Every structure is written in structure tokens, then in C-alpha cells.
Image (cartoon, rainbow, N blue to C red; front, side, top):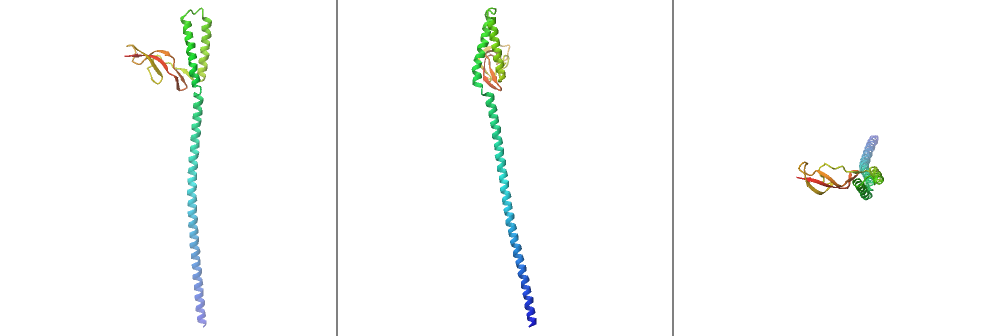
Length: 190
């Protein structure tokens, strides 16, 4: 019987060891599954984090672009806000210039004080124009450009190339880099 009990005890010990090994294997498998699940969760969170970063960068870039567009629009509005007012003032400048020409053509001695007053007024208006970026176009002797000039008359002149501006009937003006009023001109034809 001792032998039988000894064998039973050995079998029991072996079974206990096998049970422990099986439990350890199950425990390791569970840990691996948990690690695998944790790895999947980590990867999922990393992907979500990347997506959020990309969305943030896009939104930030869009906001910066909007900011730049608004700044450009404000600058443009500031530069050209006075365009319609300036166009109306061009008629005043034309009339002052005509008054000076009329005084010069007539008896200059009798109207010297008037001529001087009109010259000073015209000069002051020119200073204001320059302050706001309004400039006369200097076009005599240049070639006709339909973007800046309006042809009123064509005159034959063999001494100059075709399309050369030989007379200016109405002065053209620019405001900063834009045309405010086209110049009315006389050009040569072949």
C-alpha cells in the first residue's frame, strides 16, 4: 500500500504541476491578449492623434490664409477708398489748368494776381494728390497703350512711328498702381 500511496502522491504532484503549468500558460495567453489589445488601443489612439494634428494644422493654415486675405483687402480698401472722390477732384484740376492757360493766352499783365492765385491753388491740389498717391501720367512721345489711353483723333505724321502720342487732350491719372482716368490723346497713323 505504501507503494500505491507513493504512486498516488507522485501522480497527484505531477497533476498539480501540470495544472500549475496550464494555469501559467493561460495566464501568459491572457497577458498576451491584454498586451495585444493594449497595443491595438495604443495604435488606434496614435492614429486618432495624428488625424487631430493634421486637422489642427489645416485649420491653423486656413486661419492664417484668411488673416492674410483680410489684411490685403484692408490695405487695398485703404489705398483705393478715395477713388471716386479723387475722380471728382480731377475735374477741378482740369479747370484750374484751363484757367491758367486762358490767363496766359490773354493779357497776362492785367490778371497777374489771378494767375498767381490759380497757380498756388493748382500747386496745393497737386501736393494733396501726391499725398494720396494720385499722379499725372506723362505720356507725350510714348506709344499708345489702350489700357491707359483713349484715342480721340489720329493724325498722319511720317516723321514719327505709328501710334505715337503727339497731343494730350485730357490728362490721365493713376492712383497708386491703378488707372484713375484714361488720358484722351491724339496719335499718329501711317
